[in-house]
Image (cartoon, rainbow, N blue to C red; front, side, top):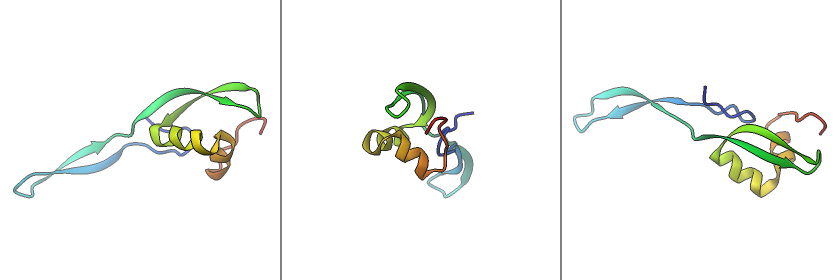
Length: 77
């Protein structure tokens, strides 16, 4: 399943809404990427499934702060 390892974000149920306002069920998928992220505290790479929003936030605040914010423990931190 496409799911973020840290935030747990995954696909959502939504509706297609036609011009006549008929609603049909559909899925809204998240953009999950498999990434190797460098963790300076561990001095090694960690492979994670992350959404593109997670990747942007990690670039800004760092992996340790992002994981701590979401209650995800990285071994060794």
